[in-house]
Length: 562
Image (cartoon, rainbow, N blue to C red; front, top):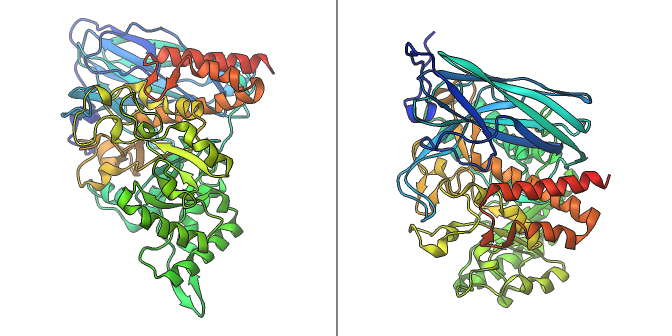
């Protein structure tokens, strides 16, 4: 049977090229996940061996960078990692695909093809073969394979070895050895830091249906796969479930929780990824779902019934009310009205507002959530009272989260030098900017992270594989690609992860390293390592090697202290 292929050759890049009469030479080198490999990147000069280290319960990626002097289709396969202490399953392999950027997000970006798409060889949701391999490696261009190892928490510490074999039609195969050191400490399944990202349960099936009609029975399993991907990347999702339907019953309301519990329950109970690498992992924080436009009395009754159900299921401690988003000073009165309504009905549920501290809202906000620029701005551009202004609020039992936005790269404009040097999640930003946020979160003693969306491009009516440019930046609010079989092969629709989402998980794992280090050695010792990498919101090392060296030091000291 002939397989239908998506027309986006630049993304799928599957081809079978006849080799010339001369035997081609395939060159492969190893680089870190913090190296952005462009089609026109120079020939690789990295290591020939992948030397990795990971805690138990951690994911660890690296890249194989490829060039050739002759045409030919490229494939790869990985072996298990074997050590004296046991065996680790073969790493997952992905082809790194590209998103074309026409208008840069900021002066840090440029037009062209940016590495961001991770197309799996065999997916980790339903185990189907996809179209990662074989792919065309044009002479004179560079490509990358993403290699991702998961180290189960039951793995014994020690050295493990394996390899990835890369083959090209008409060329000798190349074997890339892997040497993995597994540390003695364990990362928790559920992250210590709430990282809570937006998600639209309506946009996902609509985006996938662009490629072929979807049966109603496919939607719930597809949405669950997105939730599992979030768990595997140590993030939680908000705005992804409908508020449960209700009807009046005397002086109360009767809520039908069946659909809500089926959708959110496995993600909060730790049962979503049964038998998978995130088995037992739970969302660390999600939002309180209440229908809009309810009258005061019905709203309070609904909220009380919702809280009672969440308490009964053991979920209440991980729920917050997203009370207001980015209020202007003209909307402060409305913030106080909404906050008071929630406080009356559900005093146990903290109220989050995306705003810097202002005395006008004192008492109305439980979780202050300013944008990163407003917590510690560049000199001459101060927009907030600074980090110290929150100490009194934290002492009173309130919390401090923060988030990234287009204020980092320039909203509705390409920006200037002010819009450089910030943490960023747009595609065309330096790779370290996708991972550094958690180091800054620990440095500033922030209690949680928020991000407004993970599927924003799905909502725009465009094809996310072709176009993710928004006035707020390329890929802003979009961390997934709709992995339909028409695009990536196989039979079952799945989420396709971005490189940026992978680097967010790496940052969240770094956070756990920092937390364990402080528990063992104290805050001053941990701060000394952090400031070797990041000292201010806009002052941090752009060289990924410096970050990885600091991570190595954290791990070495933790192992030595066992």
